[in-house]
Length: 101
Image (cartoon, rainbow, N blue to C red):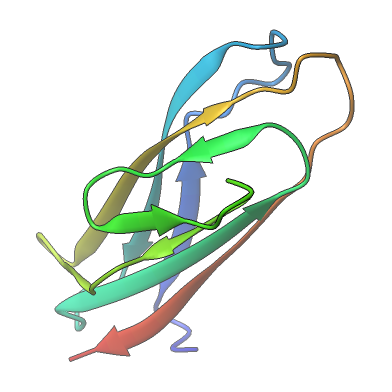
């Protein structure tokens, strides 16, 4: 990974309300890259794909369908997460993929 690359998962609450849906986005920032990709896996709740992404059958993993163009060095992937029906610890494992120059 290029050390100038930063990633962020935005929109997660500090604590969640069971069953509530949250609008999230994942950003990949690097001023020298024109495209980026991503992958996120969650241990609770379900994910819903936004434009340029898809979820697996269990709706617990989301990834890009095509590389996302960067605007001012930032590629942004929008999606939503519906919290599990009961309060439990949830982990998001996220990563960026495939820097294109």
